[in-house]
Length: 249
Image 1 (cartoon, rainbow, N blue to C red):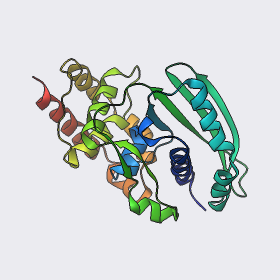
Image 2 (image 1 turned 90 degrees about the horizontal axis):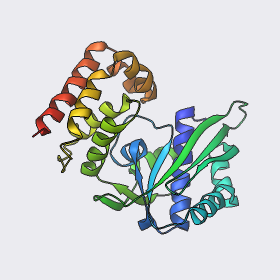
Image 3 (image 1 turned 90 degrees about the vertical axis):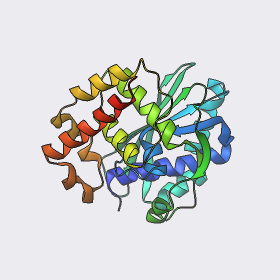
Image 4 (image 1 turned 120 degrees about the horizontal axis):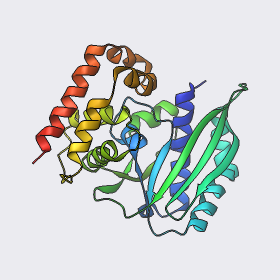
């Protein structure tokens, strides 16, 4: 039986495989936490899945997503993982953003597990290419290989800097993800100098309690103890701030 975090991850992987089999893989790219988890060996689980999309009408995307979620083969693949879809809603369907909320249920469990899939309609960033999900994850869940377009480390780094600078509500996961990419040797791409002051200032405002609730709770259990102390948080935060300051002109 999977944990709630693992159940969401299995669902995301199965959806990507089915959606990628139905839709041209060059039309969309996985980004955010799922990209880091599935392709860059992040130890942080992601509750929701975000993708960039180009040249597909809203009605066409909606038809494709809902066809995948309703398809018997997809439902059978979930049942093989002791999972089922309890409910699906589509609360946001605009020309720029389309979002689905899905309630999952593990076999023999009454409570549901919420997750979201969100597509942002935009030009894909440089650094998107088609690649297989990390084999270790595929083996863990005993899945068939998953092959989709995703962003490389340099593109993911630039996207995280932009998110840290531009979010209306700062998220502690952004500095954790930036530290992951820095440790992986992500080359500093061309980042707009205008973003860096806000990114640095926002990184400084993230507190230890926010980090504990928004990040540590979503780490693989065997790694949580490494990040529960304030000293480890202070060190991680300062390393990210120093790296961003080094990029400033």
